[in-house]
Structures are given as structure tokens and as C-alpha cells.
Image 1 (cartoon, helix red, strand yellow):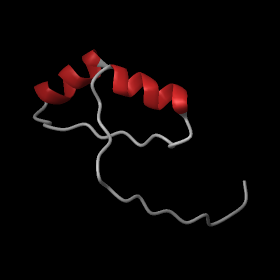
Image 2 (cartoon, one colour):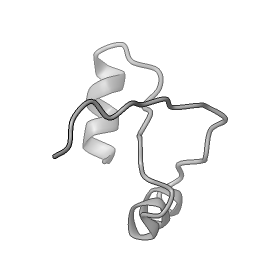
Image 3 (cartoon, helix red, strand yellow):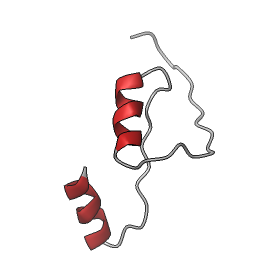
Amino acid sequence: MRAAEAWIVEHGGVKLQLMVRADNEAATGFYRAIGYEQQAVTVLGRRLADG
């Protein structure tokens, strides 16, 4: 993750946002442990087909 963050900054990026399912405790725990914080955003989606 640190290498990815450095690459983003080198290329002019100022923010990285991740989408992690709230019930994915392993992922949310990992990202929080390395300094990521929950953001106040809304993600909308719509399933278009089964699969």
C-alpha cells in the first residue's frame, strides 16, 4: 500500500479512496491499522443481472 500511495503522490494524486464492504472485517481492520479512516460518503449501486 505504501508503494501504491507513493506512486499516486508522484503522479499528482492527493487522495486515495477505497471501497470495502462494511462486513469485511479483515479488510477494514487492515486498512484502519495502516491509517485509513472511514469517510462520510454514500455509495449507490444497482444490480442489473444475476451472477
